[in-house]
Image 1 (spheres, rainbow, N blue to C red):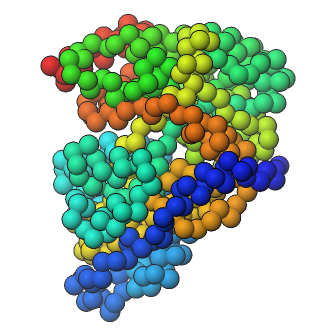
Image 2 (image 1 turned 180 degrees about the horizontal axis):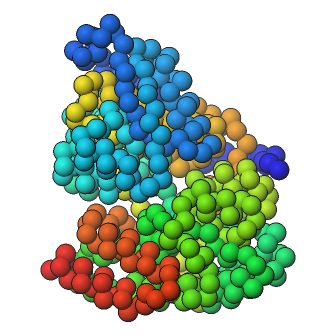
Image 3 (image 1 turned 120 degrees about the vertical axis):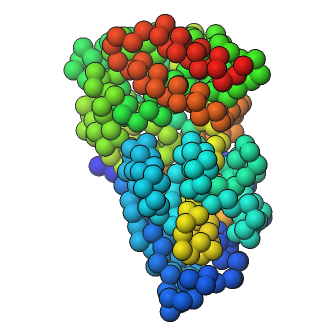
Amino acid sequence: MKIEHKRLSALMIAFSMVLALSACGGGNAASDDKNQDPAAAADSGKVKLKVYAQHFDEDTKGPFDYAVEELKKEMPNVEIELDSAVQDGNQKLKTYAATGNMPDVYFTDWPTLQTFAKSKNVELLDDYESTAQYKQNLNPGVESRLIAPDGHVYAYPDTGIEFQLIYYNKSIFDKVGIAVPIKTIDELAEAAKKLKAAGYIPMSIFGKEKWISAAFYNGLVTREQAAGFGALEAQGVTELPQAFVTAAEQMKQLQEAGLFDANATNTNYDQASSQFYQGKSAMFVNGQWEIYSSEEKLGDQVDWMYWPAKDEATYEQSKYNIDGAGSPQGYAVSPGSKNKETAVKVAAFLAAKSAEYKYSKLGSPIISPKTDKPIAADVPVMMQRIATELLPNAKEYAKLLSNTQIQNAINDNTQNLLVDGFATENFITNLNRTLGKENQ
């Protein structure tokens, strides 16, 4: 049953006022460029754009549908054809690129944008008026979401710097007799053993998508190295630093304790989340965006915890190191679009209005562009904790890893750590080989 949320605390209200300060409107960036495409004018003023976007649950449908409805008011000559994204590590989108069938506008992440930049499947947005307006309207501290490490702009972001959390079912923990907070790796391993003995999957993880196993590993890394994966690009790093070795050993310890389901690497998001929502698993790992779905399905029985560390002292020192990096992502445009000028404006508009929805309707403070819309929603208690407890005390966000070869090696090998038969030594050897090649 869905519970009624508590109202915002005074601190949350203050935090929201900071975000809204000097706002200049959520969607203006997308509509200031008045030049009409020749292709659009030739089509009786009607422009059809195919948009590949996340639209697979309430948390993704709401922002997109709201943005499209607002677009109809602002740009009534534009018709959106939605192509729903699949949670497949962007494989569907990469297939479009390989076959020359790119949508006009698409939502994707930084690794995919890097690949598409090399293959000329993403429009460089540096010189568009929409980009200049978007830069002016950014919230402080989120520049890395828009401007890539190479200085270019490839996509318009809606969210701010996102991060991963461990969610847990309080009822199951109480039933099995597991105390919170769990501060150490040993405590989490013991909890996994108790939960498994009681017939539960200790933690659901959609390990079929490699990024989530990498994110779990990075959460452990940040207990020892606040910069996370970004530390691997420091000059002269040709072997895994000790923090990364320790995290790999810890992840393997947890796997051997039965934390992950034996079929984890073949489990997708829908399957993993269903296990958690149905009370079959006691924990779930995902980004902070998961708060809304978990609260809807589990009410006040769900909460999130900080990443554990090797000991309590390290936990207390590092709990506010955040497992998330401000890598570029968002709505990008295909260079092959027949209505490219309009597509750019629409991409910026969709991103800005999606952010507006997340802030005003969902109460999320984690957005890139400013908005002058007030928070009109009750905010989940878990999000209140983010806004009043975690973000004000944040020490450091993990740094962006831009080297795709190193990132791919991490993705492959952390996924392998989820299963039997893959030793920590294999992980270290494989990563050292990659680091030796890339950082020499």
